[in-house]
Length: 67
Image 1 (tube, rainbow, N blue to C red):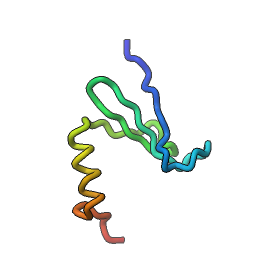
Image 2 (spheres, rainbow, N blue to C red; image 1 turned 180 degrees about the horizontal axis):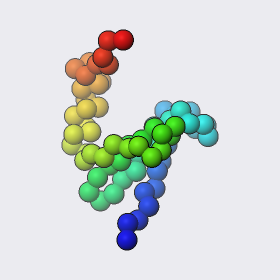
Image 3 (cartoon, rainbow, N blue to C red; image 1 turned 90 degrees about the vertical axis):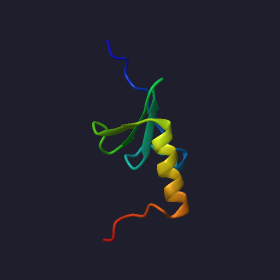
Image 4 (tube, rainbow, N blue to C red; image 1 turned 60 degrees about the vertical axis):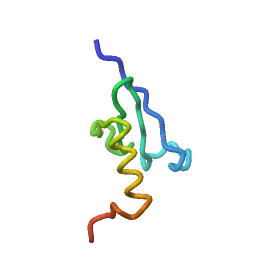
């Protein structure tokens, strides 16, 4: 039987109850991320790749695509 994920909202989401926030759930082997406005779609990763992604965003090595 699969245990339900316990989602937590990002502290950067403003603490509101709306659907404009990022949520995280952790299991012993993975991290799960989703946007609250599309809760059935989520990204699953492990801590190391996520840490590399966040470091790349902070340093500017990872940037959004041009619009």
